[in-house]
Image (cartoon, rainbow, N blue to C red; front, side):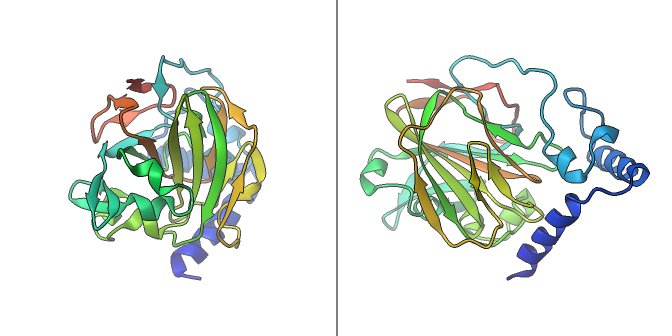
Length: 267
């Protein structure tokens, strides 16, 4: 086990500790102040019994859900665009000037024929201050969940500029989904200090749990737009990948998005 994996698991355990009330309130308020978190949609910091409860906080005010294809989470769009070919693989940019292999990222969750017309991608970085839950971007059928073990490097912009192909090195959970008549992949990338990634619809699957790689398929699992999919137990990254010529993405790189905002229209 590498240091980043060990420290992340240790941090996850500490974050779940319920400290004495007075101390926990101080910890929570200090965390909110340090990261400048807007708590207007959530319970107040002193109402959470642990840091983990604060990290995984649920909305207390219902968000407006815009039309068409929405952002699955809050965060910052580091990069988006269309895949390009190199060495018989599809590549994307993590940040400007730095690439990663989509084939390697998606591992065992695709068939080669599904890539023939290219792929569109969006990288959404969730910082420690962001709302950590993620949701269905549209009505969809979940076909499979693939877990890939790996490192837990930080996925900050600074780290992405230093570690080549970083997303493909990190632990990740991949959902293959059917939206209308095309496939999308939602890739939840683990990162340093992420206690785990959990799915709301399948409690048997969680990352950072000393499990080997696996794929679990689902026969009739349907979610409606905006339904909760799961949560990170700290900040991380979501890579959203779609078969090309199905969506037109609207945001720009380095823009911020909120869960519920429209990020693409259907072609």
